[in-house]
Amino acid sequence: MEKVIIIGTGCAGLTAAIYAARGNFEPLVLEGREPGGQLSTTTLVENFPGFVDGIDGPMLIMNMKSQAQRFGARFQFSCVTGFERNGDRITLQLDGVDHIETRALIIASGASARWLGIERERELVGHGLTSCATCDGAFYRNVPGAVVGGGDSACEEASFLTRFASKVHLIHRRDKLRASRIMADRALSNPKIEPVWNSAITSYLTDAQNEVRAVTLKDLVTGQSRELDVKCVFVAIGHTPNTTPFRGKLDMDDEGYLLQKTGTHTNIPGVFAAGDVADRTYRQAVTAAGQGCAAALDAERYLAHFE
Image (cartoon, rainbow, N blue to C red; front, side):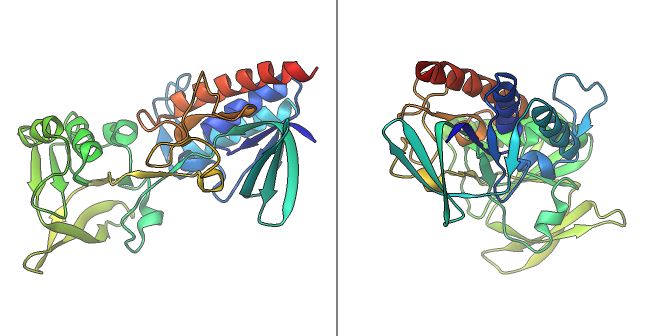
């Protein structure tokens, strides 16, 4: 019987681990299939407080993990495939085989960005390809960029990117944005945003340093292809929260994000949600860390009932 199990090793999970470990709960942290979360694929992080010159995403994650281990957190490479609550105990199925029980569970499994599925896509993340303009837009000053998508997120990303890029190409598969009218009008009225209708990226082209220099576009009406010179591509076609094992058991919204009741509490006592798995608005490292802290404190107060 564990006191606290934490699912996920992004900023939310590792901050929760630091606080739970310092509270003498010896938390068990399950790392899952993508240890480190989205920050592990980021190069330089410039907007996390305390690092004047920035810090590499993987290094930030490694530092947070070491800090949690210093206070007694334990780590295990396992994936949660099942979830049940029995009385005041929570039972998790790991990798479809093993079972483990805990008093409190912090779900910080994050959300995975949706990508286009193009060849070499994963290796170019952080090298001119990203899914967050707020995180990485400042790296691309006075150069042309592209945003892929047609919803509110794409319009918001494109508008934000105009603060830095010389020009923003808004690439959409259709001839009309599906974003809300106010967001669409704001994007299309911006002189630095140029819509690219009925088009899809079919390949990324790179320079000698393996950084994005252009994309190949296919016109979905005529079938013709052309190159578009851009130094960065922001894919804004949504995120998928990593909540599959909890569907039908924990309250979620229509996209699968966990719903928080009071603080980080879910609808089941002893189960808490933190970070991108419950946050469809901000999705920043610092907000995830803050929620990880809150979840650990909520779990500590919950566990006080068993003393």
